[in-house]
Length: 534
Ligand code: NOJ
Image 1 (spheres, rainbow, N blue to C red):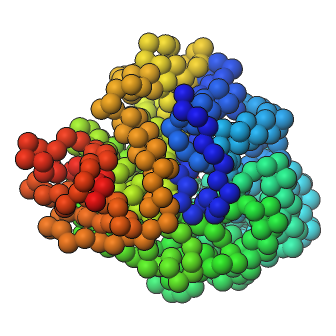
Image 2: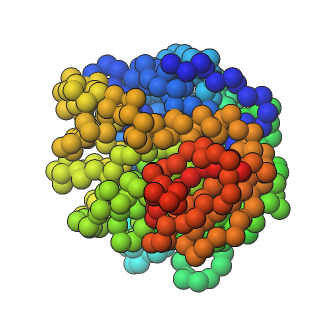
């Protein structure tokens, strides 16, 4: 095993590689079919060897798991299916000893309908102070039979549900995820305490779920297409909330990464002003099709929007909400859009894998922090989950047309010849692994220099030991159409060829790493990338 990474004391988050763990599907330590903290602890050596600098855990709190844990019933307790708080503390400390920091996921927009606050609000009835913590309203229409407004849900369908006493409550996601009222001081106070709770336990950062949705237009006015501001996306009040959060994070040297889906780059950058969030996910890059011109434009726009606020960019290809990279790149439409997800989309996995390898080198050569979603380093494709095993509410709320997000959440394969590919379960895991999953197992890829895992390990090793990756700006080099070529500082060059014609490499002294073989004239074939020492 590689020696543990030295813990960096600089602004590590400006250039870190951060690995996303979806605890339910990472490794099952107690064999009950669900991944857990014991599983993660047993695999820390794997993550240290991979060379990641931090782990972001998607929610691990007590939850009925209606939305994969994004329906939190208690933000200070670990779900018993995953372990205990004492175990989380151990995990945070052990990870740190391996040179890995921990980032937790906070879900401030909504709670579970099983959260004590919401149960009390239902109990207390209309007009009570308990209901003021949420958005309860009478309905419209003669008998209040119509929802209070027409806001569209983030998950298709309605955003309002009526309770027995006739009032309606707002939920931007499922009915089991009532939205909190962020105009209420108790909501702000509670979240400030939750942040402190986790920082006190040694976490290095917090990922903020649905970060641009918390504040609502107080009039709860109907949504009118094209009219600004949007009644619940990107309201100005949010910045005040994040300024107060930043002051808390600064006390602990903690960092934030915001889940901010906003196409408007100027509005996006406001969240990254020096006294607000440190970073936010770059969804424009994640959604960008595999085309040189589009990628170059997205990279340029990203760097331009971050520069004035002094925040580092983040580079993300995949997460627990989107189609896995290998599958997306193997399709005709290589971009990502929730609205166009469909069953039965033709996919060329060999093509997707080649592109995903090239995309890995592109992503890891860009200036800023990079995110890696569990299984991406194994080249996992999106799995087909049988209809009767689907659990994701996105599928059900679409009326069944959207396959949902379970296909990227299938339990990881660790050992090819073990039951359930070594995930650790005694019986079938919570989501079934598709046939052939063992081909992607860690032990199959270990030691195979041509595997995706070996590519990632080597790329992360070079990234860690090459200072240019951390500090040097990006400069584009002249290149043929369909080819991306850029330099980091004086020594490091990345070339990615998306064109049909093989590309000549610029002058160099050494090929540090290649995503695939060069041709017999030393040229870079289509959908291949290299890192050069020049
Ligand atoms: C974004 C999370 O990534 C997603 O998984 C979740 O369903 C929604 N926010 C609601 O919390």
